Amino acid sequence: MSRLRIYDDTRHEAPIAVHENHADISAALAGVGVRFEQWAAKQPIQPGASQDEVIDAYRGDIERLMSSEGYQSVDVISLKPDHPDRATLRQKFLSEHTHSEDEVRFFVAGAGQFTLHIDGRVYEVLCEQGDLIGVPDGTPHWFDMSESPYFVAIRLFTNKDGWIAQFTGQDIAERFPRMTPHTSAVTVS
Image (cartoon, rainbow, N blue to C red; front, side, top):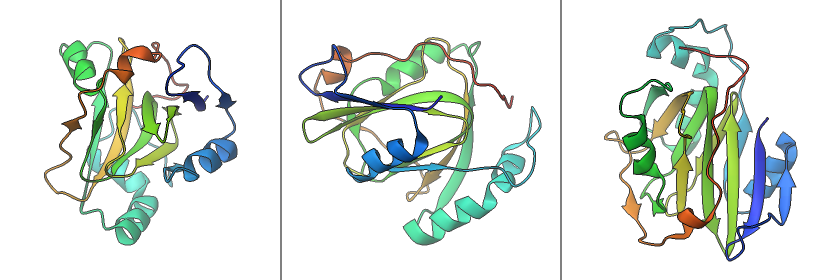
């Protein structure tokens, strides 16, 4: 189940608000300029589907965002718990950073946790199958895929070379909860 927990950025012990309803999550995130949507595939996606098959299943929503937001490229990334570099890949995203372009991810399968640091608050967003998150450029955040990652995600970029992280040097990400291993109900391998 998708979830948003909001913390005061100086108190990681307990959230000040928790939302599990998509409409509530979307409204809370919209209030700080973050896009959160639900997408449905226009056709079934089979395990082992190619990147093109995955993109075709969501073509309408992808084209809508590309047209309205100016995204120039799209790809699919997937990671499984047995990936030999999973610990290195996880560590790469765990520190607070920003990008000079939006970070847009749609979860076709599995889950990932985006944590955003905005105006004295920390917004921990557990994204699952069907969730799209759009983190605006310049927003401090970090991403956790857990020690046992599993996700298939569509990524949209304004820069055809993909995003480049600029690390803030702050240790805030170390003070907040990490994602625990998670299994989504429907998988695409």
